[in-house]
Length: 108
Image (cartoon, rainbow, N blue to C red; front, top):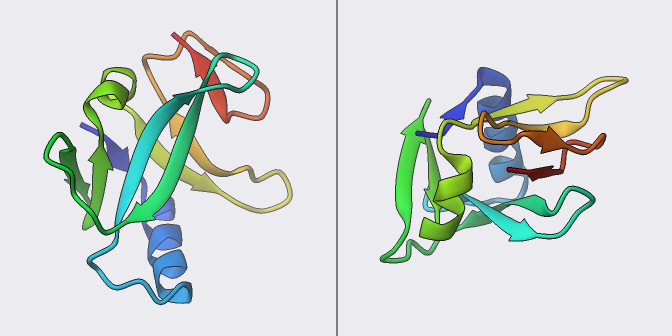
């Protein structure tokens, strides 16, 4: 399961409206190689659901995850932080044993 905080839900809804995306556009979360810790999160809107995708829904937000990324993301919570020290979207990932200072990359 991948969870979404209320702050992340509100920001996703605001971004979807600002970009004029309909509810057909879901959130795709994936993991790619790179970053200072070895793996990076990738977050985007996507209207295509692939056969191998696992679909999670929390607070009305559908999240699409490919099979490879799912191994790294199970149990993760997507949060959003703004303000003076805000970092934007943040992944609270129980599978990560090391993260970089920016919070955009991790290692398992």
